[in-house]
Image (cartoon, rainbow over all chains, first blue to last red):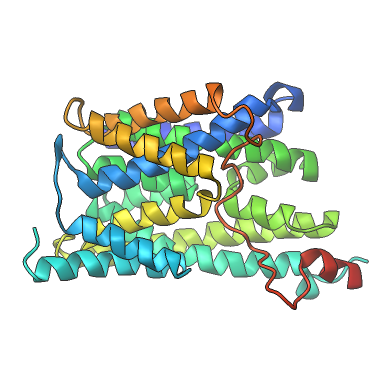
Length: 103
Length: 253
């Protein structure tokens, strides 16, 4: 049940953030610093989520098939594969490495 | 010269972006149920939160064992850029009345990129609404299909769905790494995350990285361009050599 509460909190926060852009006078938010923080936050959070989902298991750092998925996805992105293909490549790499006996 | 909707360049680009983006709702749906959400919770995120990066962040934290609060925090911080996009779109399109609320809800990377890539006001409007509403419909349909399919798959690890999540986050990050500064921020936040993992509960390392990223944005890189990394995460208007870009196409129309 508590997951539902946080889902609704996240949804409300997302909508209010979007709406603020339309309602708040332009001067108030058109601060170069705020725009830059919004940009660096986006990069930082995505980098952190990538790493956490690759090597974190609870509070431990673990090297397993997920690292193979990261490398495979990076190669697919470097070859300019579309998003859905990148995701499938990542899944295939992790599943394949596990079949071969990786943890 | 206004063209009819069938020949509208804004609508055409918006539609193709909608199909491409809507399809990857499949991966969100499947990953959300493998992270432990049920089909209803998954659909609620796509209907009400409706911002790909924030939705993936929410389930990424939950999948790692993080709390709902940490998940909502990460999702909210990742959504701040949509507020900045809203400002740009408000100045561009001036939606009035109830349209403002609808416009706010479909303010995401893709609708902003489609709209701002057009040069005529009418096409900017068409691009925004076709991309925004088109993605909304398709993203939700494919989220549901992905969630039902993911539910039927059984053990998510056997299918490599944890690897799919890693790939999805890298895929969201990749297009934003266009400058050396962006790369440096990504590396700093990746290191901060790894250092934090053993010491704080799951989910919190991501918020630690957010503090690092926010501090870099607030205090650092004064010489860098404004809004570092704030370009939306796709470019719907690729201009290969030998073919006119969108600007030239407009001029000849």
